[in-house]
Length: 289
Image (cartoon, rainbow, N blue to C red; front, side, top):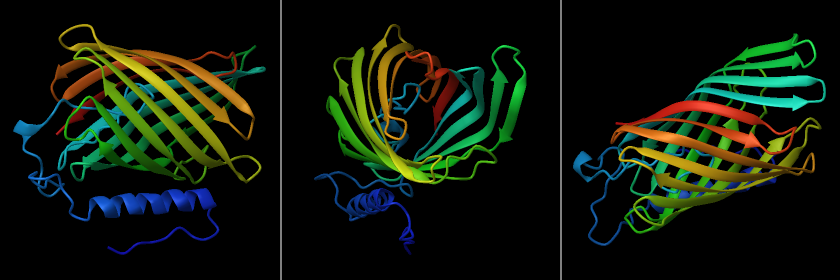
């Protein structure tokens, strides 16, 4: 496989993340397997009879530490998502339709993901008159993610993963430019009905001054089963923007309805605790093939 390195004028941190991703992929592709375990891949899928419970990166903001089973495809999407933010005399509204994450299991430890914002509308309104002063719409930025499960893929109560990502500026408008980072998610299955998850994240993104700046994120979430096919979650998320020297805290929650072993519906909210923080509502679905 031919490799195309990032150009030397890219930010150093993005080059490090890219190299780390290649190292992770190479280590997993080296052919090492668990003792006595059969090697499965996207060309030699795990039999459906051996599939575990479907694990998803949605609907909470905390990513799952588990990967999609080797050779299987998973789709997770915000069918509708609205983000609102009040800043001085303006109201900023972003509506996303089919914000989809396409995931393919590569091996027992790894999957690759492509996040595609199919259609996004960004509006700016005057708060006093409700007059729309700006209205942009179209395709959003594509994000490529690669998840490597350090442990937990073969069982146990805990799991940990590494997930580097790169956002490609493909948006018709309001593009954030090329940026990337890494997320480290962890999960602890406390009991059959209660789970705990957390993650730390680091992002480098270009801002208005045409320079790259850092973002740090931490979140934790509790998920609980309240019925045979119904789960709920509550979550706290903390984000620090070095460019703006801004700290935001979010209280999130939602509900998940499992229609089958391979199909979930969900709905929820992300509520910024500051008056100037984003307020988000969403509804979506996940299914596995």
